Image (cartoon, rainbow, N blue to C red; front, side):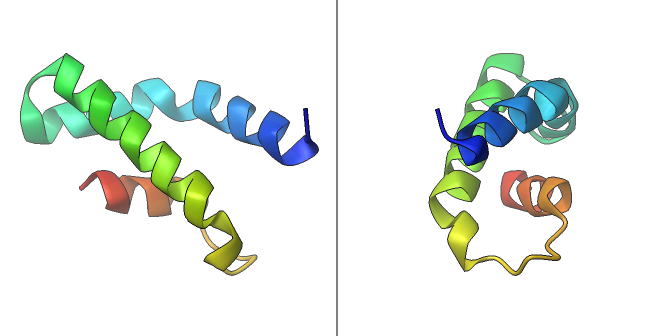
Length: 66
């Protein structure tokens, strides 16, 4: 497993519940919120090479969820 993937997994574990809680404020359905979070995290992973090194990743994912 690459270092990037290990870091991503840690990031996902550390922030998942916060992101789900945030998404629930918009959709009021935890299952849908969890889907949004997974999709947003996948979007980040697929586009991470396009982001600048100083990108605030949690803010980026929250914006994607929103």
